[in-house]
Image (cartoon, rainbow, N blue to C red; front, side):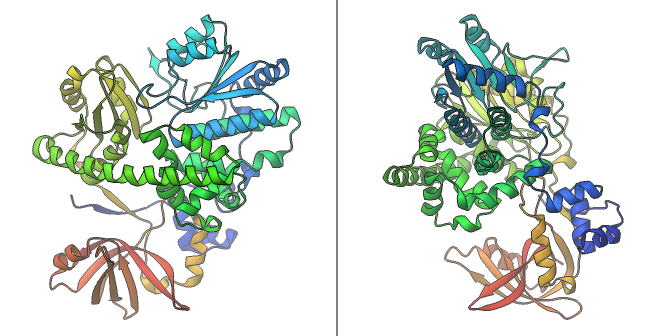
Length: 568
């Protein structure tokens, strides 16, 4: 489907912002386009540090949870952390385990098995904790929807502390919360924490800040763990706005000095330089390796990697996770191809795509759903056969609140949870087709909702691009969900030459000339042969681009990376 090119039209005094913060009006405009308004917010955006984090004491039950944990540590009671099998859950578990160990706690951890246990704490984990004489269950990145499980834990006499960040189910407009001694989740309606979109790892990290403060541990020790909250934030695809963006910016700076030997080894195995990692490297290379254990085997492999201080074990576990991720990539490619075939042969008219792949590994459902969403720009669910019934994951588009959509068909589901943009669900196999029909009947989407939009920050002639502007744009990093890389546009470029590059012929080098006669090198990362075929005899094109410095053989030059194009 042809994308619609849109130019942001947000208003502000860009010249004043530029003057006040010593930046160009172009950069000021980009910042305003990211919904950053007012001098204080612009200052935080450009120069914010960990000191600009919100107080952890604003988290409802944050102090209560810390007081309970410190009391249990003093009493020598056994604490069990129950995490989750994805990157956010692994990082949350790592953070809490390290912190409680530092405070002298009798602590261990449990991470559910994706296939055997499913998402979150279950009755078996609760019963096992009771049999192991665990006094206190501490959840992270899960637990907010575990009403029955927590009731069991309380009935067995255990203390329960929930730390989570997922949406809270409501019944008749009232929040349904599990019975617990403390619930730390910024999504609670009566929680005063001003930024609700933090991940489970950040909730855990905030609780550790309170714990360390109360226990008299140096804030430097707390700061030394920051990279794991940052990795969790990027890995869980949280919006890189507000506090999240500052966290990731600060966490990336601390990555080269991480105390985790395993994390260093994993970076090495992927041929990356730990001193220059970006949010992209975390989101698309390192993060998927940490996730691969929980997808195909056990998330405990990733946790062991982060915890080990043995060189040989770190090397072995890092290689194991890298190999698992390579295997996961191959399985994903096959699953995506089959899902696309089904969409085009059977479900092309559906507004919400629901594809059942019984043979697909259930851990890949979310990734394949994301690929379908990208390909067709429709909300997409991928369902797989599970040990009990059917499990699935969904990925959404901006105009469709996926969690609320599942609430509307909850009578067909045995379990569900998630966010506006992503969700997980379980249902009986006999309800798969009914689920597809009902979710489509209630979708309320129009054809306009399926037209992808390409947002242009500034229609900017390439004559305005300079090394100084490119360096200035780096102030806006890290880029990611909610803080996308700036996009500029220019019409009527003349193509002087085209060269397809790469062994897979998936890059195109262009020699371009602007209408004013400025020569410019351009790169397009796409199917090179299809690009040349689509271009035909045409020598004029409009582009959406991002400028960068190209360094090659000691020579520096400006080039543009073309994100979108159309021949004119």
